[in-house]
Length: 283
Image (tube, rainbow, N blue to C red; front, side, top):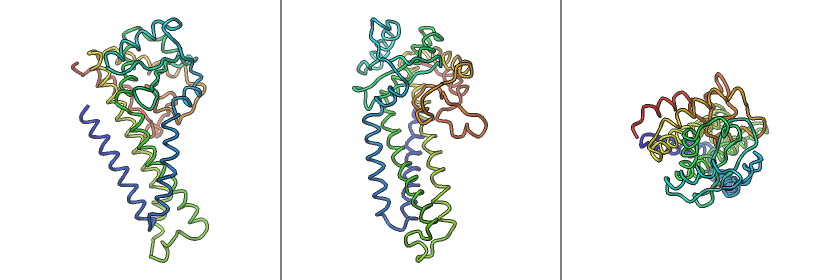
């Protein structure tokens, strides 16, 4: 876990470094400051209201102990073991087998499971999945993702300004100060791609941390490992029919997985690697 925590810190530092480099290329901090303010404002709103937005997007229905006794009981048990407040519990009406956690902090959190995963998993497997999602809540991964999204958003915004500046024949004072076309190309096209890849790498590192935290919370890594194997085999049979790929990072397994080069842009590590790490753990 320490290795992945360090990786997250390094990646956030690298992302910040890219941002500072972009500021230097811009030849001034005024535009960068405006973009930073705009991105922070946007992400603050997203961070504060994202739970309601995403739950509505996936048609999730809140349940209680009477209407979903099995799921509610397991969430209650795991949250007690993790020493966090009991999150709200939701069921998503789809045969896709998946789950996610959302909320701005442990006191305002929710765990949502699909109808498909409730049918597919036995209690030990489902408990492992819930422990993974509860770990995201406890580790405040929504905050980390918001920070990464803010920095990436600023870089993307500045890149857009650079592209429009190039189209309309000027890029601030760059030409007067000898700015090169290569720098403009890097800023307008390459830099936002690099930032997005770093953001995705941060997301993948948090998945490994949540897996490890879940196993340590339950003192059992095999339930989650078995669950991930089932998810891998079930994904093709029951693809997600609604929602948005922009929310893929929330789920325990990517419901919008790609193939080939798209794996580079995946928000999740390969399920086989996660299973291998879990089966090799001593908890």
